[in-house]
Amino acid sequence: MRPQRADSTSRPDWLHYFDDGYLAARFAHCFRDLKQWRHARDYGRQAVKMSDNLTRARMFNTAVLATAYIDTDLDQALTIGLEAVDLAKTIQSARALNYVRDIRHRLYERYGDHSRVQQFTERISELLGAY
Image (cartoon, rainbow, N blue to C red; front, top):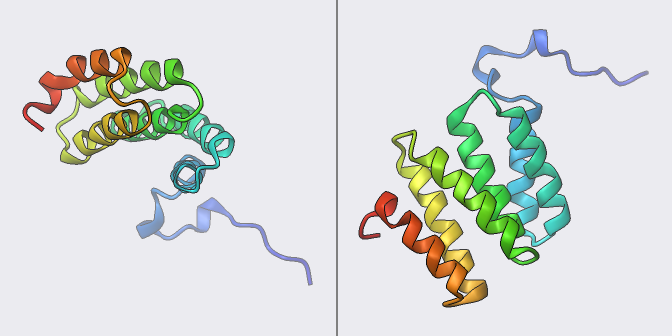
């Protein structure tokens, strides 16, 4: 017996959001948490591309991609982190602010008071307020 392939036309309504982009985002989160940076970046880039027209999802995916670079490439982490911040400014979401805080936290954890991390924090201070 041959296995059947999934058919998106038979997907139940309650599962409409689950697509390749959503799956890539979940993989990016998991690989980041496992500190498998290359996989986290690969899936993170896929998730960002696939969420191009969804600002909220793109913000979360961009933030995860930024955190996947923190241990290996400070320049990329900061550049992508600022993209996530710019996206977060366009939506009203406590979760988005938590993702920005997570970037800041991970940067401090890895680099301490590095001058570029301080500049990043200053740049996002208005968005985060007193947090």
